[in-house]
Image (cartoon, rainbow, N blue to C red; front, side, top):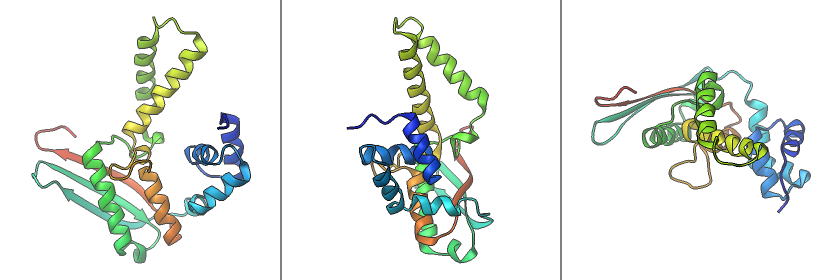
Length: 200
């Protein structure tokens, strides 16, 4: 298994314009082979998805989900480029899957870029404090710290969360699959999760 470095991920990202996590996964799956990685991204529809991701997604739906006990609810805004796609069963099915994910896993933000810098810094401070007396070298502590921050992102951002009903697949993967199928930009704009008596 090849050691996938950040420089390799950066290079593949420059070649394909795909996301960092997608590039890393492609390189891991193909043992660091760049040509095979590009093919992997093409097959997954990720390169196609990236081409349409800049297009305005002003259409879409508001989707609501109320849990069977009537004590938890989700409101989601899922967008696309045209009303035609917004009315398809596949689009509504994706909205339903994402709403179940939000209900089950309680994401706090849509993506990493939505997390306020002060929140990330506070997490870093907590992890630094935990590692302060570990006795590990500074470069090792740095790697552990970044790993913990990455885990924090995966736990708290909807797009990075593993889909609760399919191991190894993220919510972003589900969205990319629909983008590849429809040729339209599909994105989660916002969501709210309520619980009875809660403060969400």
